[in-house]
Image 1 (tube, one colour):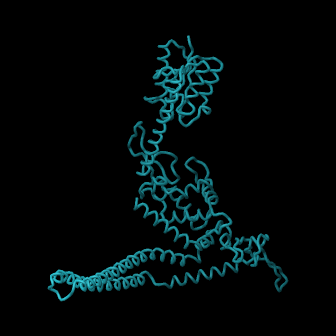
Image 2: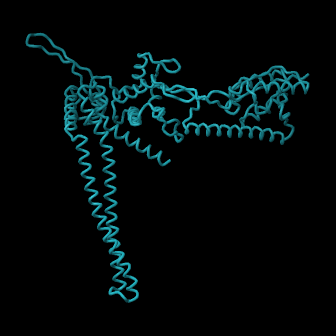
Image 3: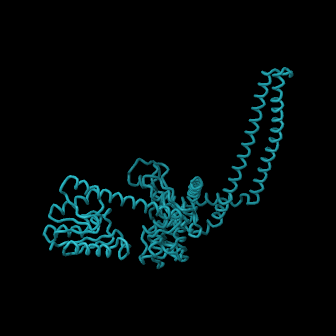
Length: 516
């Protein structure tokens, strides 16, 4: 009796022990077919969760073992449920089948019979079969990818690792395989840690390594029970799910408030900081790369002569007192990196005493904040705004009155045209035509003036809406500047620029979503 080796394969682990196209069904069908044909089944090869479209035959142990057995003459027939169980790669699988036939092994399928190579037609049919199988895999992959994108854009959880700060809750629904369907929900304790990560990155200048070290010292673990790493922190800081948006790229769901942990303004400000920290060293960075030092301007200060970065350097000064005792005090300095190493022809100073420079900057900042504190309060701003609005409305009322009068004149002139053509008017048609043109321009000019004032009112109203949160922010900085940490002071030096750019990005994204 001829010996047959069988090959059973399923593409995903979810197909194992299921009703359709699973390994037990393939095994039963192949055994029944072998008994019918009078063959003896030798070895049975199983591949669980192996894609015949994505995984090459060179990387599949079962195919390589079958090839070795064929070279040794251990079997005469390779039996599969369908030929696509051997593979679905159109430029590889047809030649695998042909290889077995050339080495004396007949290739049979329960559903499709024997694959022969007696003629050119047989070779063509062999290639067409696997070309079609490859196309079906591509179509299936495309359908699954499209459906996954649709589900994510609808705000549905489609599987994968659960981000830190969230947990899965049972919805009570079942999927097609009878398994429970879960949705994401905020995990309160982890959500507080996420807010802490964003806050320390934004306000205290923590980097990814420092944030990870901070969480590890607090005993916080990832969902897998591991310690936090730098890349874990970066993924958290760049994940828009924390703003309530599921998905990525063009396939983004509407904002889900029930999943929002971080407000959009904070998120965008953090993205600006991450982008600035990724700037190469030859470019000027607008945020402090490091905030561990006690120097206010370390990492964000540049030489005014050569434009190179000023690095910080520890230094101590010693002096003798009148009583003969020696005194030593730390006097850190800012050093021009390029001039100190003769990298360029810098004509500026090499070193600057840090406390002198820092004190000058702090005095300027305090002076600016004092002006903010003395600025008009919200009620005064509103009174000024209301006064401007009343002035604009009065102008519009006057324009409306003039516009109504000029339109009546235009109507009178237009009615006079018919009498002029009948010879019953004291005005000639040419004169009336010039008068109508002049009156039309007058009306158009008044309408343009009205539109200009209305646009100005809308602009002032938007400006007032934008000024209020910024006013509160600056006033809050002015109140807490003296008592806040050096890290907070260092980051607040660039917060104005970062906040402005973050607001622009949020507005652009809101406009894009509205247009979509």
